[in-house]
Length: 251
Image (tube, rainbow, N blue to C red; front, side, top):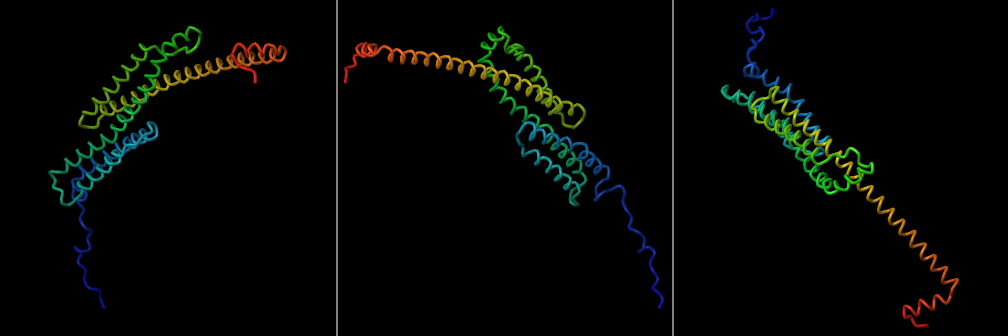
């Protein structure tokens, strides 16, 4: 039995609309994917920096990346009208900006609290450090004027980072601003560690001095007690004189 005639039209492959992806203009989808390609690694590095370098966490970083995916799903949804496609793209970019920039700002704020504590203690011992520098100790310990100068540079970098945050798009200037935030963190960390090192050195020298005083005092006390014991053995009448002097009656 012969096969039934086939319809050549029904066998032809379905026509593909190269101008659309999931019903959305290909150019819009490509722009979204390029944004993910270029910015997700930056957001991932920022999250790693906050957790591994600064030692803290920021759950909103993950929330912002989740929202990027949410906007992609909304963009590709069948019921999203074309006039809202650009809005989904813009909103996703804003979440990327937050995921990249905010961890650096938070890390700098956490470090600043640590620095303030170390700096306060350093200011307390600075007069002692200045005196000991004349004896060859604490060479290189910065003066308060030097510290203030370094803090001004750090503040300028942080200000530039905050200014970049106000830009409404990710571009080379915005990336540079994030880099200045990171540089401000590195400089403040170096200053914190430097001052902390001098504080610990001072505390160690102070404890060493206290131990030396106690050692000398103990040696003197031992010598005095030894002398008294020897006198009591060699001169029993000396005991009677001490009793009379202290008003102790004989048993």
